[in-house]
Amino acid sequence: MLISSKNHWDAIIVGSGPNGLAAAIHLAQNGLKVLVIEAANDVGGGLRSAELTLPGFIHDPCATVHALAVNSPFLSSLPLANYGLRWVYAPYSVAHPLNDGRALTISRSIKETAAGLGRDGNAYQRLMTPLVHSANHLLSDFLGPFPLPPRHPLAAARFAPLALLPAAWMARLAFRTPPARALFAGMAAHAILPLDLPATAAFSLVLHMLAHTSGFPLAQGGSARLAGALGEHLQRLGGEIRTGWQINHMDELPPARLILLDLTPREVLRIVGDRLPAHYRQSLSRYRYGPGIFKVDWALDAPIPWKADNARRALTIHLGGTFEEIAHAERAVWNGKSPAPPFVILVQPTPFDPHRAPPGKHIAWAYAHVPHGSREDYLAAIEDQIERFAPGFQARILARHTFTASDMQAYNPNYVGGDINSGAQTLTQLFTRPVFSLNPYRTPLKGVYLCSASTPPGGGVHGMAGYHAARAALKEFAARTKK
Ligand SMILES: Cc1cc2nc3c(=O)[nH]c(=O)nc-3n(C[C@H](O)[C@H](O)[C@H](O)COP(=O)(O)OP(=O)(O)OC[C@H]3O[C@@H](n4cnc5c(N)ncnc54)[C@H](O)[C@@H]3O)c2cc1C
Image (tube, rainbow, N blue to C red; front, side, top):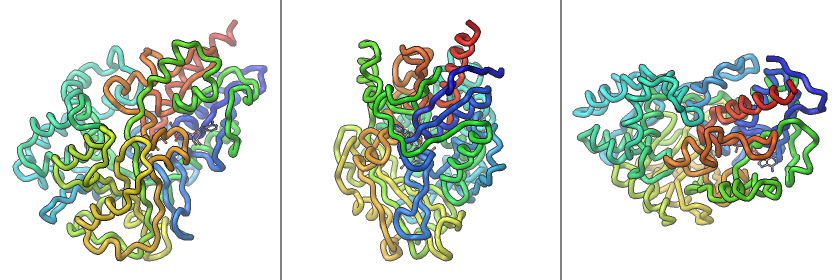
């Protein structure tokens, strides 16, 4: 469908995160004249890279692990390799160190992963095999607005009853041994929700599925390479990008037929609230944000000295020991209390992507989930968790950079209170964010759409919120240009 318009801009996208760029690309693919406006000096939102610690050490302030990007139906359809983007994989996507000094690992092979789980190996294979076989169908339902009716009813009928369970129930129902339950809990805790809430099992199941279908990749050289490739592709399609331009009110925008906001409700209310009808304003102001994170980036003199040798070959490390410890930490932060000890997610890119540090040196980052908006310093608590499973870690630190939960919001206003998913991913806000609607991308204002992670399918680098919002906007555009 090729559409043209006499307006200078057919569409303006505010915010150049992965969803904003995906929306802009899809509109430009359909012949619209598109402008992206970004407050920061670089494009990418959660996809930037920077020398946060020392010269030559390239850190990703936000996303690094791109399982969602490589499995995204939209992003994976783009010719990003033409712009130099290369994916790099570790032998293991995940390692989960245990208190006895061993670590469980998740590789592409279900069989190999199951072999590490002893008495729970068969149960693991029985759970994962059908999921992985239905992965394509499940992802196309999961990565979008509420799938009503489901596009793949058989796969959905099999997956939904498991996915709707609290992760805590599922871990106990599926597995008999504490290590297998701990592994399942570590994956579920990416939801940043208490593990006894409904549908938290879905996060663990989807992440396990992605680890077995594609593995967890890195963008060689840093996540900014992915943002750069998306930006270049947009420009190749005729789109324009203006950085260093913070929009404080809709009136500042040049005229355009469509406006797509890669913004969270808090930011939408700030810049367009005075134009929204009261009922919609109220719905947006009721949108719930979840806990924050405290993040540390390190420049290191050498790789992390994990007690368990196999953890050295994993990209993502889950540090919480047992199911009970992880569940306790996640419940505490949800209730606004300090987790003691915190559950820590650590990413070590340089053993697999040496381009991010000077020769022989390394980087790593870790975050702990912490109460919403916290200004507290969790550096010592995080480094203690790492020392517990990698004694001697601190002796390898050359420099550190930290973000409190409130710093995270200052870095990017979409991370309200440090909530990196731009809104709690509870069952009620998973498919119907930010308001309950079959078309949650549309606002009551003619031509104005939301396209950020505060719309379905929520947080993560998949660009699918941008793609779905662009599709909805294109329908309106086509109808208006026909008249
Ligand atoms: C520490 C951290 C680690 C993460 N790790 C991963 C990971 O490994 N894998 C993964 O898949 N996801 C990860 N995420 C989540 C992921 O980064 C986000 O879900 C994703 O970036 C959301 O994309 P988006 O396009 O919706 O918004 P964003 O990426 O937040 O982009 C929004 C953009 O809008 C701009 N903006 C905001 N207000 C204005 C304004 N008024 N005017 C102009 N511009 C404005 C912002 O500057 C920003 O560039 C992580 C996030 C964080 C913070």
